[in-house]
Image (cartoon, rainbow, N blue to C red; front, side, top):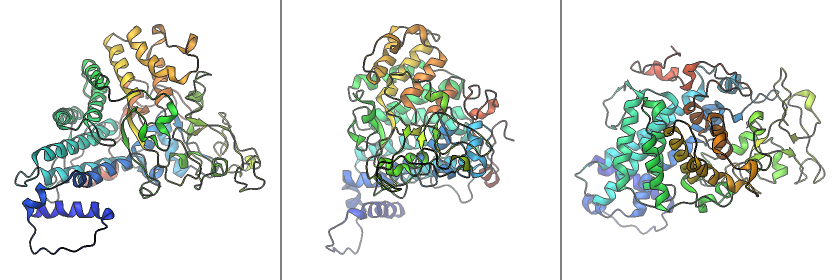
Length: 530
């Protein structure tokens, strides 16, 4: 009966905002069988709402750049996005510099935040799985199977994130654990095997469609990603399985490459045929956990240039060497980054249309043009507020509020092309052929008006460095860069602004946070952090 009450409470709480019928019907007893057997599709959506809502912590929250999240922590540790100190702003005790330079500590909040967020997502999945695995409840068997398959795939996703960031972690699959239960660390490859098993069993029971849901193809994509990293995570490569899973998605004909790269990231991007899995955002309803990469990046005065309601914070920007790596005619550069003079289009600081000026976050910059340039004049106070190209991949519409309504794209069809190309390339001992380059060229060509000559990728050009550049040009600002660098063995050996090519090998994993080690003596710290 406790489970029944819990399920009923979940539906009431999650469905309450849509309730408009105030007609009262009085019951002296709840008929559990009658209630449970009549669960509608809308009820099922309400039950899983928190499971999907939890995923916004991957990138959202007003303090995510301080408390840590999958997107900010992972991208800041890689070679595309950096958060340099700007005078008195964006220092925060040096935490961004430590991430960028691979000198983070076991105490850093940006390391703790993702750990706790991932396990909170797991706990919520375990709670619902516990409720609906009770076979005494007369839920429709097909709905039960579909629901449990979604939940177990969602839980596997969180474990995918955990083993990516931290390696060996506790595997908790029960909700009704004893009081004081402290899980022990188990091996990364054991958790990997659990994820593979759960997703493989779930896929046949998942629906073919469902935007923003763990449907059959989103789960297949997740499984392909696990196998793509299998050599790093388990020591056993699985390139044939990556290839096979990518072909399943391709042969389904459910998805296609968008004709315009920018359309994948516009405000109403839910209509893009390229999106396999996205996390929905709404500027009103999701303001409590807002999607705000634009706030992290633009100077606050840029609100007048873009004519938005929200103002900005002016920190994260593009790494200069990466910005310089684009082909001169690659339209992805202009569709991913904002640069150039910013103008007072609202007349907020004087005459409408006048150039905006720097405030002087570094005193010497006061009165200079607020002109985003890919040059950095580093001194003891950091870099200038006008320096660095700004993140602009997701459209920021006129009148935008602090929270964007663009859905966050987690998996898309272009990545299927790249995963398959990488699997075939590695199977062929890193020797490219026409099939491999054609997969990448199929994605590249939409970003050039005249795709020929030096714009076309040749088999002879494809090596580790070029493959990583192709990944960066196509998937910058999407949260996957750290994983790509590690898979290619470059995470600790590449040089970028703030990072020398000699960081310690153990930095391919983040440490188990110190606060968690103190709370649970059964946790084992990663090598190099003891």
